[in-house]
Length: 395
Image (tube, rainbow, N blue to C red; front, side, top):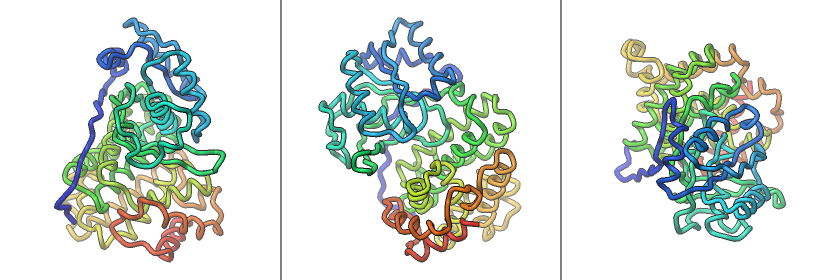
C-alpha cells in the first residue's frame, strides 16, 4: 500500500508554546499589517480567551479596533457577508481568527470576500477558484481537534439554499497557526475528549487510508503518540498546561497529516451523521472509529498494526505477536473510549447519544456514500456495507 507518487504541502508557520500569543504582533508586522480584525464567537470571548491576545497586541502598539464575536456554531453566508462589511468599514487589513472550527472557517471565508471583493461568497466555492494570495491571516485555535489551522478547506452554510458550500484553495491556508496551551485550559471535559478523539481519527485515517505517504505518516504517528500519552492525564488534570500543549500540537500535526493524505469511511459516516442528527463532529469521529477500523481490517493490517507502538508504547508492542497487532490497536482505541465514557459520558454507540433514531441509519448510509472522503477508504464500500457498520455502531 505505498504510493509511488504523492504531493505534500504545508506552508503554514506554526508558532507553539506557552508564550506563543505574544508573538502575534511580530507576525503581523512582518506581513505589513497594522489593523487586524478578530473573528471569534461569544463563548470564546466569555471565557476570557481574547484578553491575552488583545493584551499582546496592545503592548506592542498594534490597535485592535474591531472584534466580531458573534460567529454561530454553524457559520453561514450571511454572517460572512456581514463581517466582510464591517472589515471594510473599519479599514482593517488582516484577520485573526480565534476559536474552533466554525470561527476558523468563517475567518477563511471572510478573507476570500475582503481580498477578492464583492458580497457573494458562493461564487468562490469549489476548488481552484481563488487564484492569488489573500490578506494576512492568523489562526489561534481554542480546541485541540479540527486541525483547521493547517487545512486549505472551509465549509459555510448557505441558509437560503439549505446547502453546505465547500471552499478549497491553498490560498485559504493561514500565514501562521498560533498554538498556545492557555487557549484550551478552560475546555470542558466532554469537549476535551471529543476534540482529542477527532484528532486521533484524523491521524489514524491519514495513516491507514489510500493516499498515505511517508511525510504524512510521520505527522500521523507523532500525533497518535501525543494523544495516547496526554489525553487521560489532561482529563484528570484539566489545568495541566504541558498536557494541553501536547494535545494542541497533536491536533495540528494530525491536521497536517490528513490534509495531505485524506480521510476515509469514518469521516464519510461522520459528516452524514452530523448533517442528519446534528451531532458534533468530534463525537461522530469517536463513535465510528473502531467500527470502521474493523471493517477495513483485512486491507490495513500492516499500518494499523504499526500504530500499536504509538498507541500503547514499546512494551505492549513488542509483547504482541505481529499478526495480532492490528486487533490490539483497535482494542487500545476501544479502551481509551471506555475511559473517556467513564470520565465524561462520551457516547461509544449511536444509541448512547440519545439523538439518533434507528430508522435514520439507512439515510445516514445513503448520504455517506455520496461523501468525497469515501473515495480514499482502503476498502470499497457498498450501501449494505455502510448499513452494516452503522448497525454495529448502533449498540
